[in-house]
Image (cartoon, one colour):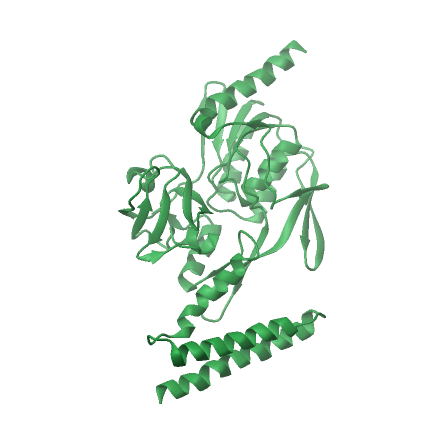
Length: 374
């Protein structure tokens, strides 16, 4: 009796999806939808066949999140399906309030590969290093998940213990690592002799206030901006940082609805010389900042960015899950930014990135020496 109900209920549910999709497509997109209906129909048939004939008793509905995630990750690097728990975490991540382990990474080799580990963080204390591959979190494999689904697995709503399966760099056997997530501190600002160093991890109100205090209290000075460890931010704070740092410019946002122009920068921006450090972990608003620094003539040092500066929107579902969808791409003036990545003006090999602060300081000194000679 249960199987009969399932065979009736599942196709009925998918038929409802077909009807609702049909109404959306009818009102929003004058295009041929026959292919959409064909594959939705095949999905209904496949679901029914699995329920009736698969060797083990399974619930096809439990597999749907994986199907959603596979469809979204086929679109681009950042579009994702997030379950209800990861949706909560993602919301806090955008505000810079999620508890994490202090790592950045990318989806490489179908798993989450670390590109940076924050010194002193819980991940650093547990011995994680750049190049380590996280294969599972709390018993759930990360294999072939979308980027945000992988990344949000390493954050939590509040500090808690998580268990990782990690393949250490240059080792053949995965290891089990237990650690506790923690609320990550904001970016740091410190002085190295005559150079100010800013590690900008969050593009948020706190970062804006910190930069404002620095520029208000000091005469124009050389600055190293480290943009490699992005862990959250918002568009309004990004624009506030731009008003402080850059001359006037136009950020063009292209969406399905058209093109929006956002005025960035200010005629009263701070005067400074900067060396800007970038790598594969420079994503989203930090990647846009890198493009603006380069446009204003500052030196970019490091490794090409990943091309992850798209405009993202989150669309919630009634069950608490959500879609994170790329709904726009950016251009600064006539230069496209986002999916292609940003080349450094001074490329640094991976093995020399440990000396990047020294290299950045030398680059700033050379700029200063040229000005003095002129």
